[in-house]
Length: 195
Image (cartoon, rainbow, N blue to C red; front, side, top):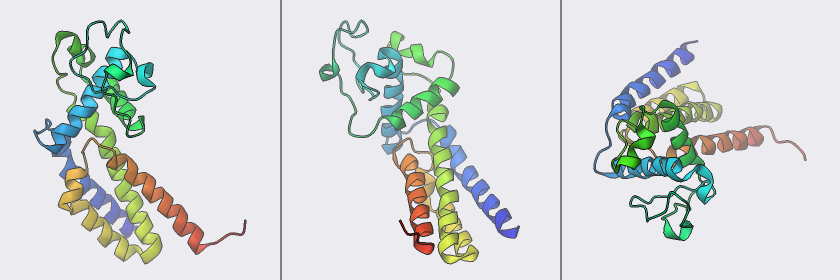
């Protein structure tokens, strides 16, 4: 019971540390760069449709003549195809669900959508918190509850993880997947089964 309370308090502290940044506007550095990529992707999903480039986001700002009518192909657009499209689709879904009214029409007026930062960041913050929880569970499985609480505290208060906690990028989506794979590995290592 005491350990659960400790985990709850540490995760709550992690949320508080990251909440201020999650609601803030994008800066003009790495955070803003990453946020802009996914905001442009969301706008272009609205502009061209999700299936236009097989789910991959188009990162084109200045659209060629006739683009909305389908008179250009993926060779004319900067299509961000070096990562799977699930993360930009997740970001677009949250902006569609929680973004401010009219965000998806901003491109018609040649302006950036206002107020989409929190909606873009929320799924990544949630995935980051899931990673912290899974990280605690993995360390607990390997080294016990005292070490796991210490590891969770270090991870929750580390400046790097606070910075990355609400970053709109692939890392926050990848980290829980890595933890799930490590959980499976450790479980199999501790209790091997014959195939």
